[in-house]
Length: 137
Image (cartoon, rainbow, N blue to C red; front, side, top):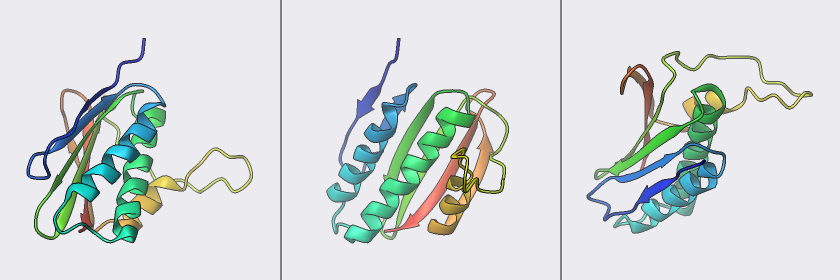
């Protein structure tokens, strides 16, 4: 059985979401958009969509390659939106040649790295990993 938990708070508090099925991906995108819209001042429409895209790619990668579940945390400070996506797999993402014909992917990780200010990977929680990205607000 799939379980999805969502918690939306003011922008001074983090937004948390946990999911273990593909239905969590659009929920993560929606949470990212709602979070961006709650910020004062709100980021530009382009920055909001970039945040939603990065969150969607991180959630998709966690489900496909990271053990089938993820948690998402969104925070913001004066000039940066902080995104953390955790999954149960310890292996870091790996670069691979994008599949232009077979539809097996390979585009998400390079896109995440290009659209963000920085990317850090830490071990934990537990045996898994957390990918931390920062985007301009």
